[in-house]
Image 1 (cartoon, rainbow, N blue to C red):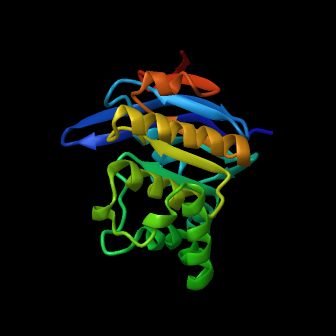
Image 2 (image 1 turned 90 degrees about the vertical axis):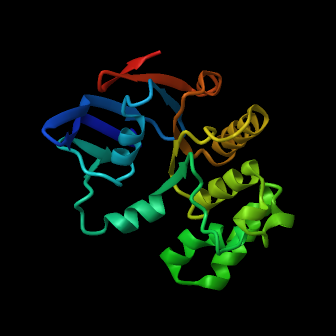
Length: 223
C-alpha cells in the first residue's frame, strides 16, 4: 500500500478578474521510505503541491489518500494528523527568533504532548545527533545559515513523522552546506526509513533521490 496518493488534484487561485490554474488533474503515488525529488520552473506550482499534500491548503477537485484512507484539510482532527505525521522543512527556516535552537526544535513536540521537559530532552538528543549540541542554547541570529537550516530539519523530525515535505530546503545555502543538508536527509531516510518529498531547483540534489519528477503545465512527468 502506498504511503500517500494524490488523485486528479486541481488547484487554482483567483487573481483580480482572472483565474490562475496551478495544479491541473495531477496524480502522484509515493511509497513508504521513498525519497522523491520534484523540480520545475519557478511558479510551476511545486510549493502549492507540497502545501496540498501537507494539508496546509485546500484543493478544488480531486482526492488525497494517506495509507489508503482519504484525508482532507476539513477533517476534524487534521491539525493532530499534520503535527504527528508530517514534518515540514521550508526554504526560509522560520525559526522563532526569541527562542533558542533547543526550544525551536522542541516546539512541535510540546504542542503535541504539552510536556515541556520531555520535549526539551528529545530536542537535545536530535541536536546532538546533528552535531549541534554545543549550539543548542544559541538563538537563530547567533547561528550560521547552515546551522539554522539543520535546526529547522531537527524541528521537522522531533515528532518522528512518517513523511517529510521539504520546500527548496537548500535554496538559501551555499554549495557546501547544500550538499551537507542533502547528505543528512539521505542518512535519515536510510536510518529511519522516513519518506521525503523534496521540491527543489537543484538538479544535482534531485539526481540523488530515488525518483525525480518534473512539475510542468500543472501535472507531474518523469524526468
